[in-house]
Image (cartoon, rainbow, N blue to C red; front, top):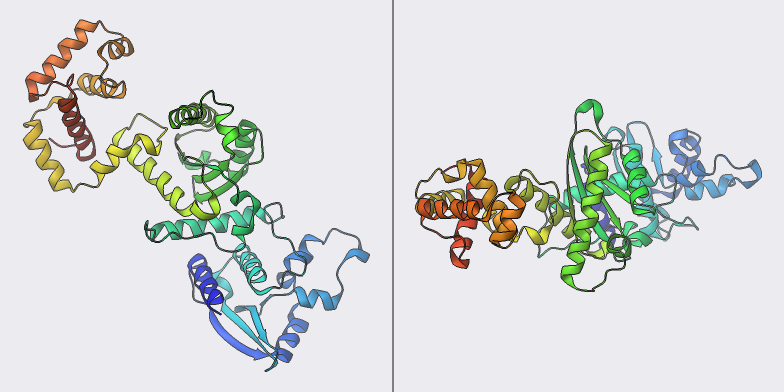
Length: 398
């Protein structure tokens, strides 16, 4: 019964309420079905999905009773978990009706069917009519898992999600966050259609919040036929794909958007871990690079290190190394350093990007050296100034 107890904890985490356990006689359960099954709220999911078919194709009353796994008795909802044939009893879980939505109830039914062998030929897939609601519940589960996530405690997808074909193949994961006016909030269905037009295939879109989504795609769709099968080539392909995707989203919807993407992974085993990483990458990118909108994890390793340093230590570093300078308050100096570091400290390329003469850039770098004593054209000094710049950004103090 350990897997049933684990499932109970997973369900309680999703619905945010405790499930009480009951053991009643089989007769009592069958009588409850007779009294309550005629109500629309108690029609099993399989029956509801078949409501449009011809009368002779509908299930018989006895078969329908076997399909019923939950009953709404008014104030409380009861879920049939299992039975004890020797005692002729049924084990149920119960909770207040007002504590869960119909979508959550249907998902619980699917979870229980998968765990208790009650499938009766009912195939669970993301093509079912309630797929959107399943993904909403999965998004809630993901957010709850991320809140308590640690690298030592990797949580796999709950059943039946881990049986979905989409989650068993290698995928590139994306997280998109939007800051939109209330009157112009992005509708998930509209976003899904836009993404499918860009990816050229069906997209599994998982809502994580009011304006935050997780979605995934095959690596071949994202990277295409790359000339080189190297880590750097995949990074370049991912960046190019994300740039096009961001431009599409930003042009279609009002507001500001932020996007992150992962290397390919198996969602069944890594969905919580990778989603947490992508959310953290967006948070870091928004903190350290306020003018950028694409935040890829492998480009934010130094920022992740700086964010882990306490504010007191960061302030001390700024005061001691920065020598109390107001250097970074100058937007021109700030932009010069950011582009200089992004181009691997290449003076000629930085001058071209800034549309200035090379000597003008050299003058600016000399001025920085005079202010704080570090020549960023040298590797060691460049590292120190880059750390100083990142700590300044996150503290906004000197």
